[in-house]
Length: 106
Length: 111
Length: 242
Image (cartoon, rainbow over all chains, first blue to last red; front, side):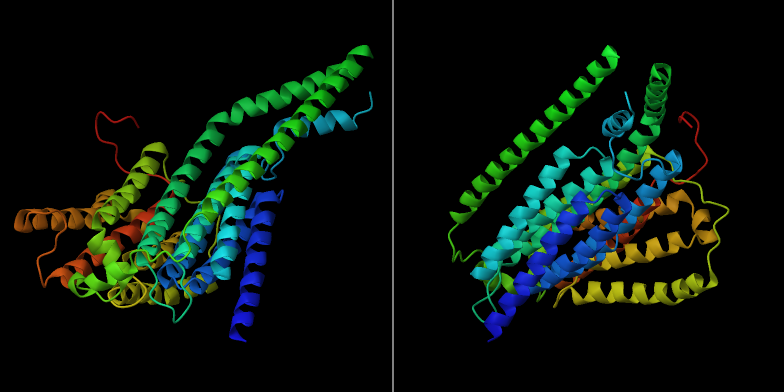
């Protein structure tokens, strides 16, 4: 009984982790990606507890979620300040230009 | 056993996703995020290999200590990489704007 | 008009090339994953690892938590170098960039100030408790240091005015406090016992607590300074490039 419940928990946790990982790596908005990364770190802490590694879980919750997230947000703010919010979306410049040209009637 | 396999597989997939993003995407912050996800995948594999179900013996603490070290190092590396990315952005700012303006100009002259 | 179609064709080609590259890379990544999975499946399943070896030496290590014993006694060398890595990261950040000047327009709401006033002491208390708890349960220098660092981030976010007046020499001293204590202990052990980080019998527990406390303070300061992002503004001495 406990075995099946724990396995169910494992599967849900793993699926959530993979989904969050995919979302944070593929979302167009970097800010959204950073917020997803913070929640990803918190869920990783849960996974560490499940793996019977409470030390790692404590470190992950404090460092992975609590400090890496603010570091990213601070860097994002710094970049935006020098760029006036231009480069927050992750569209690389070539593709950007191509789209502009494609939509233009020739 | 099934737990170890499940979590190791997750770590492997996370590593692959991170690697893919690291190469494909161009934004520096996204690259740093991808490296972090890759590292998390490696840590997950390490800890999952050391996992023993409750009541079936002690857990090997050496991988845990290694992962703890790894997490702290990855945070410091992330901080340094972010500062480097900011610096690159600040210095490459002008070149990018110039190129954009040029492109706009050529478009206008063509029109 | 001809040039326009040519350009369009070029762009289409470039898109095609980009897509082809992405597809090729995706296939390569899948191959890499398959390879790594095959390698991983050859790891023997019921690997006993080093659990029994650590357990047999647990009483000599001076602490009850196996992870802390591995971190600061059996593999103390690793941890020493890790603390150095943190110090190097700060040195790298400080040599690259100056800390951004505070935005004079931002107003901190009184609610936030109240929360910070309540939370910061509690976080310091939790950090101290985690360092102390490291000897017998989950916890230790890194966890405690991380909580201290988070408290520092909280203070930095709320832009308290006195934070800007802390002289840089104090920060520098705080940064090297942990590494210095660690190296000092290691060298002391070298002279007393003949080996690096071979604690004399009976003193291991106290020495580990001493190292952990110093390192937790330094790690917390390091993480907070990494968040501050750059060297503090100070009077430039002669010969330096401003």
